[in-house]
Length: 355
Image 1 (cartoon, rainbow, N blue to C red):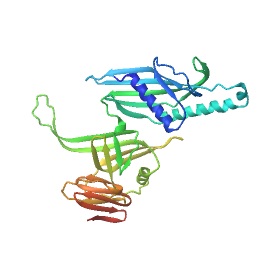
Image 2: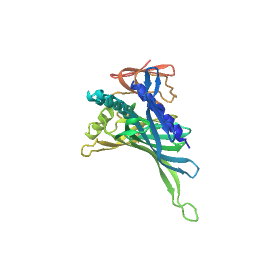
Image 3: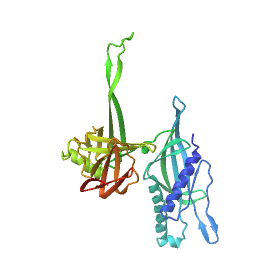
Image 4: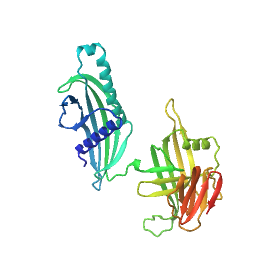
């Protein structure tokens, strides 16, 4: 199991990076449990003040699967105590206190807003760790021991840890070279069987022989303006060709697979003032290229039965290999692909040229 101190150190390093990236003159001291409070340090005429942060584990649930694999969820709270400047009565009277206090609090909020704006995942000590942040909660202005006049923020952090787990964020799907920003995905491989109802068994159990299989993928994702939304809009308004094919690529960081697909069922959901949502399914298409339609930016090069090996692409575009055939998606200008000593040239307004 990952030590809580490891998560604390990771969080401390991330806050420090954010502070540096935002070019803010702040110093954070992130500790857990009975970590040491860091008091201001004076060197000559310069005083370095620290924003002390305490990371506490508020709840934890750990279980073991049947093979001993550890699955755990943890909830932590980060209390950020911002010491406020100690000004003279004249400075307070002149409004200096209001400006200085709010300036410091705004800087801290910038760091916390950047920290919590997205979820994360990474592998730590063979554990797949998903990290989900909640927005910083505003606290109260109080007099705190050792710090004095201060203001507190609280951030709740949720950790999901699976030993040897595969995180969903590592499963990347591209449609025509563009990443699908999905919230949920289901990839299904089903088989159709030929049943032998006359199998010679005592209990009359039917024996089955698989005769064909079907591959499909269904994505749930928000409706976001751009290329994919334009594709969906054409389908919903009846502007696309019935047999339009696309390239759906999958990678988990170790393997890559390209699928020639048709878009199947499309559902657009909307409710009150919420962002619209999409549910889109893809089915593997028959590679009969005489029956398929492709978007305008696709060009094809059939290399017969020879194995194709692509070298790095020059220009702007994407190249896919599907069943021994190169399918090139050109974005603008021209795209050049090297294939075993031969150059294949694709442009937006010409057919494939082999040189």
